[in-house]
Length: 182
Length: 84
Image 1 (spheres, each protein chain N blue to C red):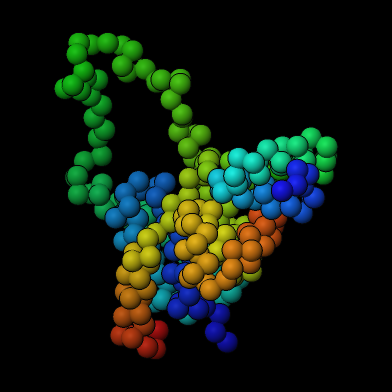
Image 2 (cartoon, rainbow over the protein chains, first blue to last red):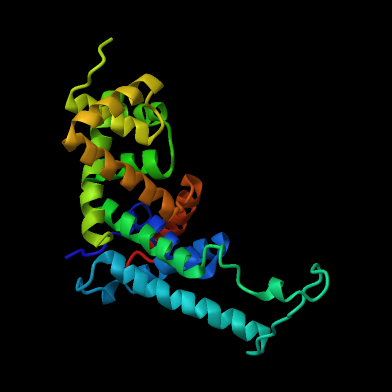
């Protein structure tokens, strides 16, 4: 029995893995490399997939190891585990304590982290929609394509599009209320 | 041009306004409708919240060509190791 479907991995999971990675490595190029390596590693260990988890969870578990490996590698390249904190950088004038204190009006890291998890929840909800609804909703809402372009690509009328968008939004609201807002 | 929307029309305008595709007049009619219709008021609130939530998440997507690249690398690997 074929449990995995590598041909669809990129379409189905690339954006999810990308959002997962980008928060953790903060570099688009590295993130893409890690995703690519994850897919290749997944392909190699396809036999080990027992279907106990979903395909996505399984790929995430591979990706996690890749991210750890990445940090190990850059750490060993540096050849030192010390952390240097410079209390003064070159463009600061003088030695102002205020410059070194956290700015309470800055959006804090926890905030940002929460938003990243929110992104994953949204993509998971999107995953539950029928495929065509999900793609069109994503194009329109997340990638901000305009109505005309989407209609042309899928050969549908604007009123078709709005019906699809309406249904998708309805399911998305329900899904997020269940999985995020409570 | 009529001034009062039916619920299904209001819902459509509400969807469009989530993408800034409703005209000023449409939005005005929607506001009027929402004043008198609690059901649509609730729907509009949730619908707007969805838009805000998605914006707050700031989801990154890969560009189509980046996806193509990933795909071709994967395809290459499948071709090289057909037994895998």
